[in-house]
Length: 256
Length: 66
Image (cartoon, rainbow over all chains, first blue to last red; front, side):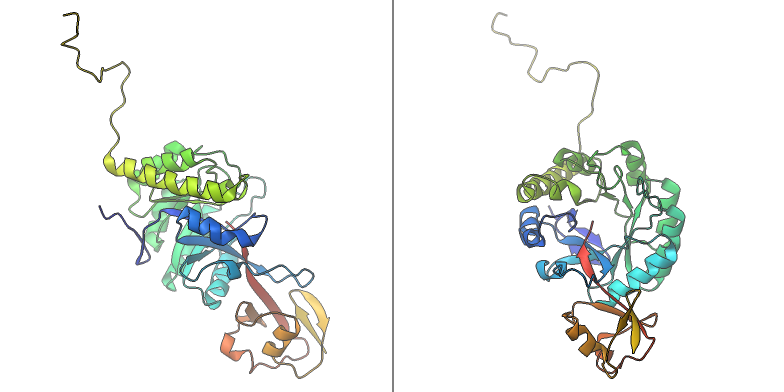
């Protein structure tokens, strides 16, 4: 069965998007990519620090990967737009993850500013994937202004707490005609699997892999979980019910 | 002369173009992104643009992120 995810005209086989932050060394990134099977990877844009000789993360990302730069650090639409244009100028394609955050405690995104940035950038030809709280009206507005997908959070960034917003994610999956990619908060492969079973188009995660004792093994676990969850969704989950329903025949027992 | 580099004043010799400046800072022109006086500078302009006193340069690159 062909089951490709198409975003911005690009066909993807893997429904696991991964980040590049928080690794003990960037040199592990190629192995994380290989084990996870991921084809889309996020990076951030920062001022060069002339006081430290940190390497360039791009040296560790194969050219075959679809790069998804984020606008982390942006506190309003204007800053996000500036970062997006800079990232595009780097010559790494036109995908952008809009991330507009001014709340430092929970890192929850600003829906209004995110919509404004998405509208401007989509009109400029960017493939815009906005990071949002799972708010139906924000998501509907993003559809209207040309987003390529919506990326609602499962729990606050970096918390590994899982699908705390599950009921709202279900509503977005049901109502939004774009791919719904669960981004942030996914802590365990079972969280990713559950999101996929619910009908999410993909999952994006970083901390859960990067903070594992063995990130490469965890990358493989997440890759498998996303595949399992997607297959379960396509297969169609059976109904749940209160009381037992025997799976074996209730006639023809040996003592009859 | 003095320019503003990533928000801080830096003294340098006059007559340097952006490409020469990047190499002097041990940066690879291909992997960085340059904003010159508030405008994105295309890579093919790195050699043409000669830094002037009071210029403002922002030099960025990609780092790990989620």
